[in-house]
Image: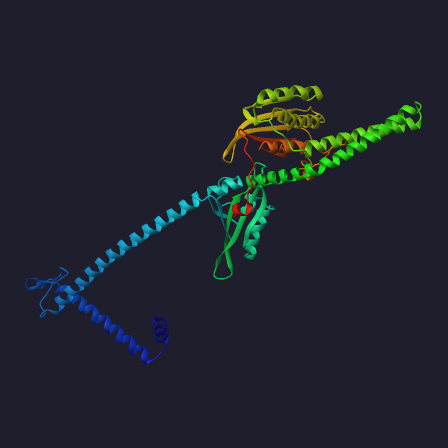
Length: 457
């Protein structure tokens, strides 16, 4: 309305001049009345009374003083209302701060990881559970692609949420932590919308399912081994009978053939192949047959010392050292020795090819895994490492990278460790070489079935 009046005044003409004159006269009259009010403000104090607000109220025969007192009453009332508003505002601010503190406490103490990412790709908030799941500290105001990896599965899901507004529920992704530890994460990601379609950020809930996935893997492996043992026992028996027959005929051929003849050479080759095949069948039976574990206290340090001596006899050019802390575990002494000896011997054989000289280090550490405390044993070497495509396959039966290997050595090692309630993993070291990490509980417990859906986010 004021803008319309200004436009109207800008128009030339008699009407605009007359209106402007009227406005000036009104302003002059207002100034005159104000001057009279100031001059006569305190003129009639003796005849005043007080109203309910405590302000002076003059007699009605003095209009100017009556107007001034009324104005003072209104001002006082406005001041009282202003104080009430300030008190209400202060109480509202305290309630807001209390709500904010409660929200921060809930976010800080919630067991699931929480990440808030804005539309620019910056992490604006992260609780301790998220930092623990990702293995990264101080996530605030860093780019999620920098923290999680440009090409990681988690980064791709967050990018899809920010760019397309998609929601991902109960996804399972693999995540490589800065410590080069491969983790299994349960993820739910949803967009933060302004209006109906504008994406202003993303909320990401994380849960570390690594231990759960390892436990499920152990359960499935034990079930598969039980079924495989039942099936393989009969097959192996038939194989051994057939091999014994073939070996007997080959020995007859070799004994009847003259030395240096082609027939005698063929008999030797048949015997050699049957011996190799019999060895494979025997190793397979070790892998498939259910283990009967002794339940005894195994003191690990003397066991490791015996292994050092045995490896030095087999691979004398590669020094094997032991360091760290070792305690007692519950298990089978002979089977644990077999598993760790196999790992140490493999490490020494791999390190023997190092032109600068090979070495193997066995380290011990007391470590907490979830709610259980146990022994961590790492066997590391400075060999060529494990090919990237073989890392996920080396524990599979009959998979081997050795020319004359059966592919059952590491499968048997994994079976022994799992039967003891432990875990084993393989990885390449950043400085070169491979590392096998074994974790054994101090007190062995039976493996329980776990439903993964209940633990996902």
